[in-house]
Image 1 (cartoon, helix red, strand yellow):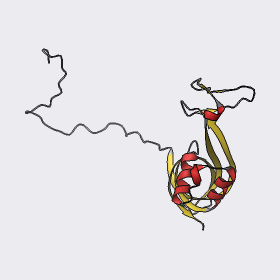
Image 2 (cartoon, one colour; image 1 turned 180 degrees about the vertical axis):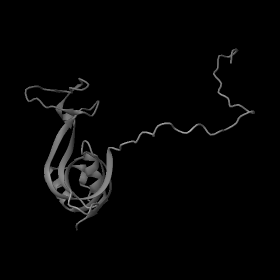
Image 3 (spheres, one colour; image 1 turned 135 degrees about the vertical axis):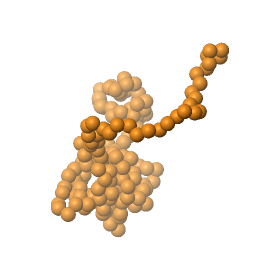
Image 4 (tube, helix red, strand yellow; image 1 turned 90 degrees about the horizontal axis):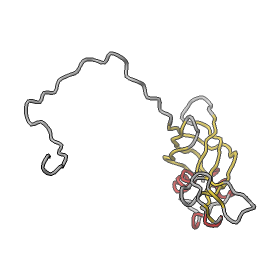
Length: 166
């Protein structure tokens, strides 16, 4: 509007026709999905480890023993070590149960995925205090889980369902 300087979006009220356009001259691009959903069984645990995360940006912080504080290499935020959140991840060897042939591969479960498995099995630890041994026990107590993982990075994006062995 020229008087109020407002921008007005309007549709044409008449003389509008919807017609088919010309056919495509080239094939449409095929989108390659990086994620896949499969049913897997955890058959081994390669590593369970904790790390400190920046309070400001939540990125992993490299710990240096000789300083009173720790500095995030990503956002350069300095903080006391006690203020940094402790997070867990696990690298596990799984067997694909969705396939008829034996297909084993490694995936990484970050804390959010570990919590999804734990909640599905109703074994939430008190105060969400994880330990290496507790995570190992919880993962081995799970029989078949349905996961969505990135085929390129092998990081589990979502745990859809989990079944307890017990």
